[in-house]
Length: 117
Image (cartoon, rainbow, N blue to C red):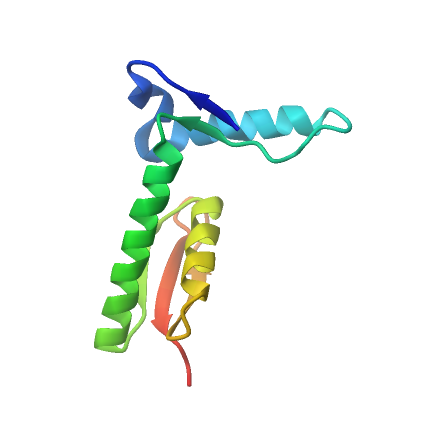
């Protein structure tokens, strides 16, 4: 894991994390080209990844509550594949809702629905 500290890291993170995700993707691709190197790479800046995870978990909890209250599916905003996986895994621990992805990149998004009984 590589963590950056400094000023103006908002520029490095980019809008909705696009820049930091691109840097991470390049790091993964570069290391994948080398043999016998670990493939798991995480690039972070001033705790952005942890803050983003907390925000996604809050959104997931709110969507689950809304889906259960209104007994209908609730679509979340588009997310990256890794963010969708995080939310899928987070909500999988609950037995009262289910999740699935819809749409095509870059508009692919997660849907939270009451679990089928």
